[in-house]
Length: 468
Image (tube, rainbow, N blue to C red; front, side, top):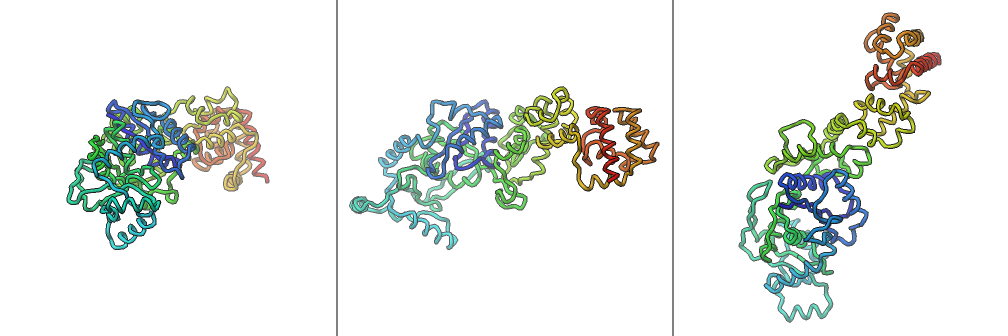
């Protein structure tokens, strides 16, 4: 069993691309098969080496390692379509020998105008077959004029193309609705329709999950492969991802590239837990590690209805992933920036205290400043709460530290008795005075991390704030 992911290196991978890669990787690993990576770089104008390196980095970041493809090798290479023209030319020749193709001298402009007219008339866009009946003499005459020449695949009318989609079930297409189509461009290169199908067959791909926007490509590719006597993969077309507004997912309605998610500080396993449930149903709603995601993946659980991107749901899995990460993993995730603010001997304690209150590394930096800086920076709302608490409140808090030290429970009880304040009126001013924040980690743990001297200093600063 072999599945594949075949991106075009024309930009950074987005959520839809990566979900396709993930589903194929999950399927391959569950079936003890091979996950193949192929780079479809036939778009000479838009394909860039930097995007190839970026997509490989994205896959490695999510631990979606391929067993065949670039940097790994394999018997079916090369794995860049730009290096496979000789393969495509060989099959072009076979189709020519069988009389299944013909030269087309229509210009790109002419074809585009025809497509527009068909669409405006409510007809499916397809080639009229204008050049299908050209005589050998006429073909020679047009070639002598130096007109650009493409190659079209001829489809017999009245055919029924049927296959069982891995996701959508039985599918049936009428060849009359498809029409002839180009399989070699004017410049001799191969369009997606041809090279994608040829590569799947010649590389031994058995299962190909892809977006449902490719569904209408499948009958064309099946016709080509059948004409060549090649075995096509089992195709499965996954529902698309929509934004919250119901329109296709885009930058406008929240989509981000995998590179952006990585740079924002999302954890790989959080993204995997989210994407694996985007158009796929797991009975287990809880957080799962990679082995569990693989074990419970099922083609029958892939939805035929569009999935909706929900950034809050993504944040939920980020929170779950952080809670399950070890302190060493959290330290590595936050990087060296934290080390500039947190004493090395307190790093482990610091992360254990703030772990439940951060979603991204920059939030850890905020807490590093809140706990270890000499002076707190707070907003007007926080200062107003300190003013409302009153000078005597913080003087009493300062005195309570002298007696109860870092024992926040005893300190707060003594302060409550002294000031007759309870609940929010007691704890919110204390939290702000000690951290500059209205919300945050467990106060007893914070007090132990702050230490007596810093707590005294923070209450002295609160008195000073009140006096201003």
